[in-house]
Length: 364
Image (cartoon, rainbow, N blue to C red; front, side, top):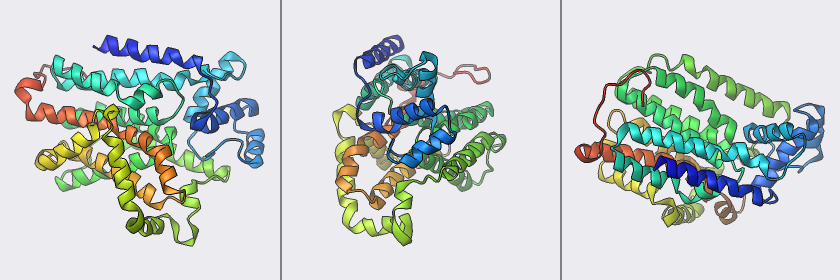
């Protein structure tokens, strides 16, 4: 099954060069910024001049990893390309499939793991993402991997998983602005879960958060250096974003929840998020049990964070929902699928859970 999924994903990637990067966020945010970087020769005076010109590319405050990857392709080719520059971002799809396969193989029996892998690898927006240079695939894959690593530590106490988690978490910050919210959601959820069980933060976690802290400081400095700011936080008047969120609750909450519900109930999502929420309601004791609470709280906090963004947006609400809701929900859908896999293994251990085997360090 893994071989088939990898071949199918690679085949989708092979289709991308037949379509040029011409429109949408793929062109106006990510590829346009990469082209500016290549022409300017880096983040020097020429890059600042492009910024001063205004609207050369959209959302200049977004993290730079995606355009840096595309610029790397331009540098190897010695010229600006208009399709092949997607390749490093598209290959995140292959990485995601491999990570998902490892996560499922560790916990589930063969047939059950294969079924879950087929579902996770055929999510509708994943099928689309591996032919584009949108950053949502990077966010979805990194969140999945981070939560998998935390769960591995919860399961066996191996400190090496925390080392990998500390090294991977900065990828969220560098991929897209939503990554910041997801990091805060995850960190807050882990801290709360540890506090509620009257335990200490796992030894070895804090030192390995240094890459995350340094990345956050650098990216904050980067935007300050170029006088860039997130428009949702900047364009809210004197009362700020939180006040806008509160003001938006009476008139917007119903419309937002209705739109998000419609999105997650589309067949192309495999109903993974609704299934997560149903399992949460039906078995709250398992969802918030020791070893699972941080994962559950992270997904709930992330959903709440996205709702808050739409409550406080200064953009026309329906337009904002239409253009982005499917992508931000996709960022959480693979992680919700992993949560469900863990839940199934807990509820039906004799039929679904993989039998324990002697494992070496960082195995599985």
